[in-house]
Amino acid sequence: MSAQPTEGATDGTAPDAAAARRVLFTSRRFLVLWAAMLVSSAGTFFLLLTASSWLLTEGGSGLGAAAVFGFQWILPVVLVGVVRKVCEGPRLRRTVVYAELGGAAVSLAIGVFLGADLIVAVLGCFLVRGLLEGITKTARVVYARQLFGGPDLKLASYTFNNSYYLGSAAGGVLGSLLVGEVSVVTAGAVDAVTFALSACCYRWLPAVSVPRAEGTARRGLPAQVRATLSGRHGLIRAVVYLVLAVGVFQGFHSAARTVVPVRVLGQGESGVMNLQIVAGAALVLGAVTVPVVLRRTTARTHQGPALNGLTAAVLFLVCLTAQPWSLYAAYFGFLFLFEFAFTAAQGEVVQKCPTTDLVALTSFTNAFGTGLLIVCTLLAGALFDVLALSTVGLLYAVLAVASGIALEVFLKTRPVPVRQAQTLAGQEVSAA
Image (tube, rainbow, N blue to C red; front, side, top):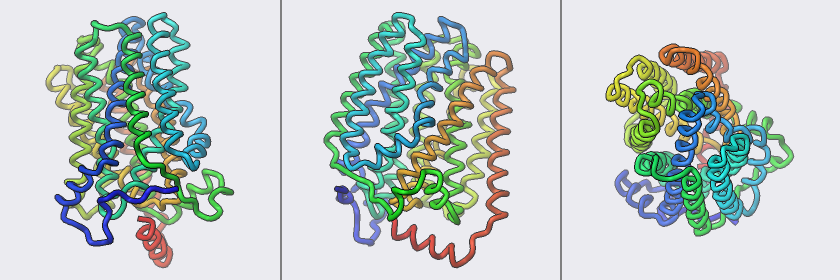
């Protein structure tokens, strides 16, 4: 049975922005969902950075360090149908709790295998862990849509992921304090504890389920996604720029986050943790800035291409400097813009997608974006071994900009008939 909208939902009379924030940010459901992501992401990034920097310093391979991140994204792409099926089940809360407990067990195993230098087993664990995280990521979007309504939905869609990025910064702080002080086995145990705490948070949340549109169960995922996107240019634009942000920009960052501090700055594991603190701060600031800025912005059509182009430009700027403070400043700007673009696009998807199609579209978008993320992460890791940082940055910046231009040209050649546009607008309003 679906949970009712949170106590902040209204009957159509929109409160002022300050009142809306106050209601949402004092909602126990929102705070528990926020805390679940905070603790698990802190442990996750601590273990990921520990494993990645260990492989880079011990093995000397940028590709090996990037593989830690890349392997965990493979199964959510290959098994996207499984992710969709379990998240559309009637017991979503139980599914998420089991996924988090499974993540705890796998995290502990990663630490043990890494300590025993069983690299193949470590990468195998990251494969399983990625599938569990793919389920949780999709479920979080469902929870945000089902637990919050009215004016709360818009604000929640922009802010519910903030704790994930705050947790990433906390993971960097934890790593800077413990790097060299604890073993990789202990790092795995710390991450396991955070997943267990996250499971307790999800257990406290109400049970939710996803309403199904008639005929949806008989439709395959690609067919349902095509029907959902048909004629919805705004939703198509949001989906594509979300995929580009995840695939290209996060893919570059996933490989650069260890290569830049170790090879460019020569700072070793401490530099990896320091850059993660900078990255976490940029991500949090970018996420919290989105609802403030977009509340005052009406030209949403140009929002995606502008953010995509600006983020690509700053990404290239990161690759032109080798001085610590200027590089950290440029990296902060790059990730701030990346997170702004990602959060804005994800918020548009949550708000504009019909409720009955949200799991399908989210599963598809996660799989497509993650597939591109795998390719871009592993490719960047390999390129960093043979090319200069500036060359790799230029290639990724050009890829992002060219993809954005291709999208805008595609949408201009496919105008939506007026009658269809009016019908879709009415459907989006009723779905919200």
